[in-house]
Amino acid sequence: MKKQFFIGVLILLMLIVTACGGAKETSQELSKGINDNSSGEKYVFKVSHPYPPTSLQQKTLERYNDEIEKRSDGKLSLEIYPSGQLMPPGQEIQALINGQIDMALPISSVIGSIDPIWYLFELPYLFEFSKEDPSLYFRHKRAFMDSEKGGGVIKAKTEEHGLKVMSMSQDYYSEIFTTGKDNMITDLESAKGLKIRSTGGTMLNDTISALGASATVVDATEVVTAVQQGVIDGLASSAYYALGNYPIKTWTSVPINSYTLTVMMSLKKFDSLPKDLQDIMVEAGKDLDKYLDGVSLKNLQDLYDKGAKEKGIEIYFPTEEEHNEFKEVLLPLHDKWSKTVKGGQELLDEVENTRP
Image (tube, rainbow, N blue to C red; front, side):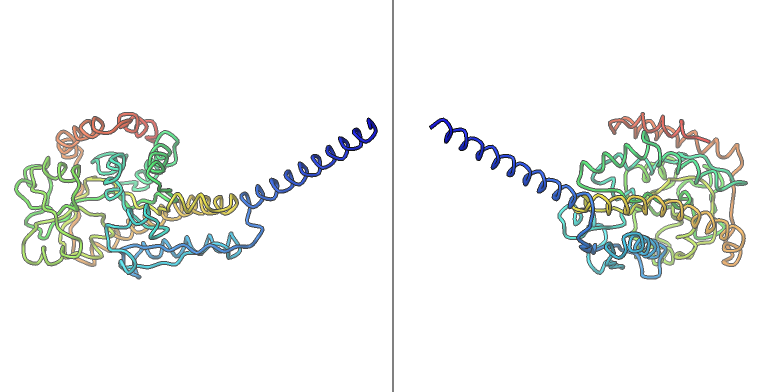
């Protein structure tokens, strides 16, 4: 009887060991499936953006697509829909959160609608700049965006909203452009009473108002008509975009804001990817940032050297005294913003810490 009992126990133990071994093997297989894409499954992401098919933004996505396709041996790719074909402009962020699209190209001022931490980039005189060395601005802003206490904090905060930042690229800072040489802005006095187009957003409107001008919100599709009809006297924009799209005559080099273009993805979609493919998308995003910094700097230098001259646009670089005059009325906006955002002062401190 005892012998039969021990035989029964032995058989039971063997079954348990076998089951545990099978469970361990299954667990390892599941873990392998999560951490790599050995199955060869392909992932195609729907991307919506409002810019034309010939725009720099479209080319940015095409380059990113080329890189992730190459690095993943064709397992990753983008299906790009420009000109708002897939989603109306301004609705991309909510569409990402709702899972209607996988990726988008929202600008910092738009992302600020879901988290005001992004309005940091609307502040005037934020990053270092130099007429003699335009690369100084790009180096400072990149150092901030790559730092854990700067861009790292902003990215982490954005993930709380279900959004993954893959890239934070940059153009030069937005400056002021006017419709005629008789209303060129050279100091605070010359800015008084002018109607300057704004894209909206509290900080930009406050910046324009602090200069003594009147902030006039005009949709991007209506700016040319607004200029032609005298609805506005000027606008705040990056030089590359302004010279390429608007009939302006003067260019005043004052750092009005530092809008940041992002490549953004649904966090849920990103988390669903195997770890090796996640790494490819992140690393490709970092390389895209470096590439676009170089493109933006070259574009700016080309505009300085010949673009403005070919279009008959007069460039004005304020003197140090004039910059100090602008700063006196604009820098208080930094303190105003920091008081409305948790951790805002710490981000401004990191801007100072990363200053070249």
